[in-house]
Image (cartoon, rainbow, N blue to C red; front, side, top):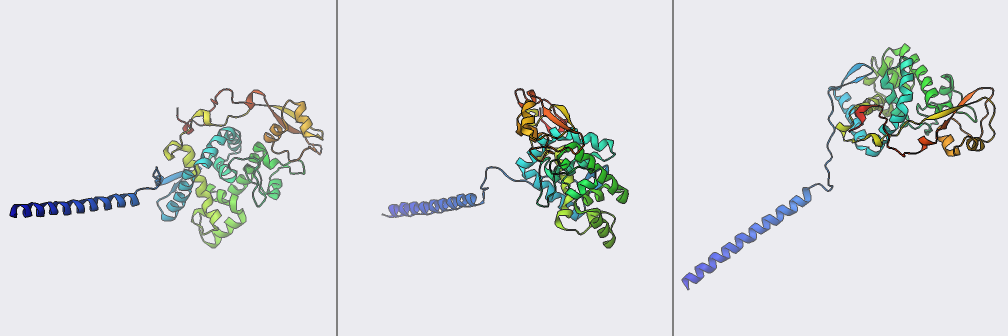
Length: 322
């Protein structure tokens, strides 16, 4: 009896221990379940450099406000996957038009990124404030900088002509400020606002001004999208040449007389009306009234309307992996 009691007691102790262990194990499992990520991938903060370069000038990002402002925009663009990917694809088509015009006007190449954040490189986009085109000109500002805007023509939607107009504005702003970051800020807020705030706040740089949120973020958005465009793989964008949108080939039709029906004009030139409008977004009506001016209408070539062969044109080799 004594041996049996001891065995029974020992067995009981083992059972208690096993029960406790199982309880602890079960609790640990539940804890792990509660703490593990709910999604399959982890979200990490993109690396923030200590400095970046804008228009040839080094911008120190170690000061808290600059680092945090840049961090906000870089993180936003990094995790807006679809949008940022689309911007790089479109740039392959439009940067070859924009870059030479900036260069011939003495405007730093970095200002092409201003067009990226203004319009997402969509020539026909219109804002709630009625700013239109890749460079987002208001009608008054567009006319002041040499663009024709009539009921049937809106050159704010012409990529080349609107880039020339933007250069005119940017050169005038640089004459006033002698600082490209201030020029960029003025493109958003206007020269009067930036000049006034620089004086009132006794600052030299728009990066240190207390401004409305949109303008405070503006230059940092330009610098952040530049950082990603120059290092897409670093920020998780894996792109092949085939993914990029190819530049289109056109034949040009000079027009100096009115066209009453652009759909008929398109048919006569062997293209769909939709294609005519898509590649001549400055045509804002179903007809064209020339008012004595000569316009160039681009007719896309038949072969270029199809991706029968993979795109091979890569405007910037940094954009792609091979």
